[in-house]
Amino acid sequence: MPFPDLAEPVRLCGRPGFQRALLDALGQFLQAGTSGVLQYSRYAVPHYFIHDNVPDQEISAYLAGAYRFDPFFRHWRETGQSGLLSLASLAKASGRIKESLESYVASFQPRTGMADEIALICPKIGGHADNYFFLRHERFSHSELALLRTLFPTLHALHKRNQELVLAELEDGAGQETGFPEADAFLIEDSSGKTAFADANWLAMAGQDLAVSEAVSAARRTPGIPIAAGQAQVLCEPLDEEFALAPGGRITFLIPRLAAEASLDFETVLQQLFRDRLTQREAAICGLILRGQPTVSVAETLGISAGTVKNHRKRIYRKLDITTERELFLMLLGHIGSPAN
Image (cartoon, rainbow, N blue to C red; front, top):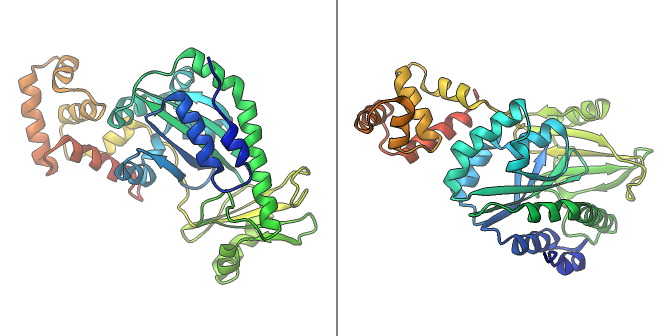
């Protein structure tokens, strides 16, 4: 099996376009129908850097709360493990990660029209990781997954080197990309507390708001623990001795995104959503519909006729003031994204 052509990402390492080049090289090798790059954070809602063939509506739904069912995100947050993850490998997990996978595969993935998904998760500084994700209509083969696992140390090293070069460019004042979301602000200090680099957002925001300044001070006293500043998150983490820009220093992020909510159990969400609105049988039918089951399958699962299911569906839609399955799914997403959940 041929290897991905990494000539272009190697050429662009440390320069604008690296992530796009690496995504394209792997996407062409895998013949992926959908791909992108997501930044995962241990504390904040994920951020899309690149999204190819991902509808805007799906992106909005994901960021509004559907990320809480993302088994790749859940696995990374709970284990901190980087590397190649596949739906097949996550199926071997146990407990909450497996439950999250089952909900995702049953309820969310079918709506993408894709049959399989993989994620290459590359860690970066500041409690973040970049997820290069790929979906396609056919299952990824064992040989493809084996090759990517073998290749991952090289990909990780290339990704890490890109970050080092990008930050070195920032120190010289020549850099145009930071490797982090444009809205995020960050400050890098050396081991003596002297500023090694402060991006424009940091200079504009960090000293202008008392609540933010107090959160920054608190974050420095408690490294690795996020401190809320309104709807933003402040996080300070130490840098290792090999970090060229500020060996043994620290990096402080001001992330103007909501804190990432805890992952959700699908059954609990359904109970909350339909409580006092539907009968137990109606709620069960909605649950099966939201898992992508057609009318005939719902009927077989519940031991009733297809006609009875259709009658229940009409009554359910009337009670919920909706007319389509799509509206039912959007209702679910709206519930997931509500502040109370």
